[in-house]
Image (cartoon, rainbow, N blue to C red; front, side, top):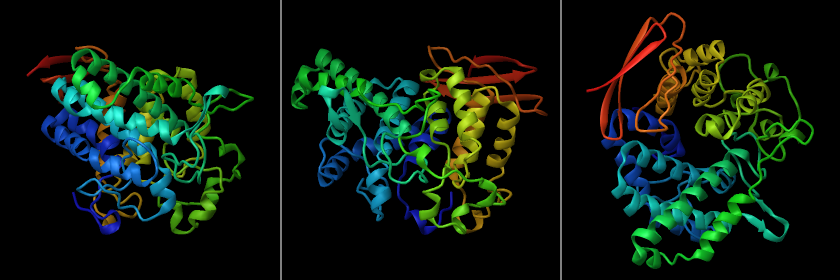
Length: 393
């Protein structure tokens, strides 16, 4: 794809969360290369963590080819911590999709362990109070300002710690020498358990519904129609400082979390989140339309799913946000648009060895054929009149 100079050719979480799913199902070698990059840059992530006065490995917000941080803004580079857990989520997705046990044991497991060490050192943890706080953080919603206990980040960190605990146990059983070489101990693994069990998930004290973070309800409510009149980004005419004090969301945050970890939340919790956060989203990121399409399709909101899918699909072709000519193709949007079809309208799930689908095609679509990889096998999916069939190729 083509890109402008804004991101300086750096590697962001966009690839881990929005592009990797496409490659996992369509080009396993490319997917492995992307994950190999994160594994190879573990030493740089450890050095970055050391410079930030924390332990273990912290992946940078804007990663150069050598894995070093290139972000020049203190609020983004220091506070968007979720990228470290996003990397772990991506490596786990590769291991599950490929069945590559060698990559897991030789590369991914150490990343899980070193990132767990980072999280222990980054949280303000009071075990005697049963409380662990992630202070000075920013979730995918970059309009939240600097906040505390972002729900997306805390839940992804729990996922990260779970993987680290399992990896440590696996190494202890299968490779005790490496377990010792990594200076692992039962006491450290118990500390990961303790941190995981005490992470806060923000909820409204009156309704019990999920909140993106601790400060969202303190922000100033605003009619988003006063901030933007088209699909262009509002930050072109409203300054960043002002946007961070409004009760608005730049792009999917809580909804993004629920699309990535859907089993963690009940159907009611997911629909409540849509009701709460979709109306106040400004869609100021090119990632946002596709993420909303995916969430809506996953949760039976067909009309909304199709509306957002069309905006995502034609984002660059029709200059929906008036920025393609200036910025080039938005590849992460393309990846998430594919996911909105595969995991959204087709309802793909991969709980066991055999993929399962629950297709509800967009209106006007008669049929669909798609090929995909899963655990070393290449499949062909055929969907017609609400029914589907899968065959190995």
